[in-house]
Length: 222
Image: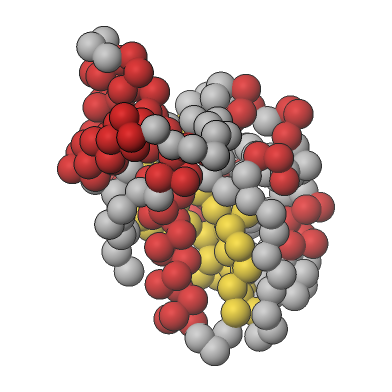
């Protein structure tokens, strides 16, 4: 299953830009379209994933990994399997944002929002492909380290399980933030029953006040 990025929703770009106006001036619309095009031409989306049976003690079968926190255990309560995934836009997207910042700060801000919306779109497209492949079974939403009470340190286990650094070129900092920044790791549950959908965005997260991603102006991708 390949990473797909055909377009970047402008509504999501505006959300990352914290734009709340009901009217979108034509010049802003043009800026969004131009920066979307730049990001689409530059990003090199990649992803890796594996599926594991979920044992009764929340251990992923064949591993020594117990997803951390009560929120993820409740989230996966009705599931018998877990898909572990990692995705990135590649260092090319990050370099584009950095280069542009030295020439046009406004464009770099829009490109940063485009990158955040783009990696979310890659993950959404992947989940759509998974849902089609696993039908008639059902998938949960994504759940990422750093969301709710799931510790960010779970990144280390995910990176080891998927060989993320070697396979898609993403590394971890000492504080477990990903490099390049426009990257996401997540767990997705698989169940025989329909799964409830959660609210999206930072405000829906129980870790909103303490989130290390949000404090740096980033997102975990949910």
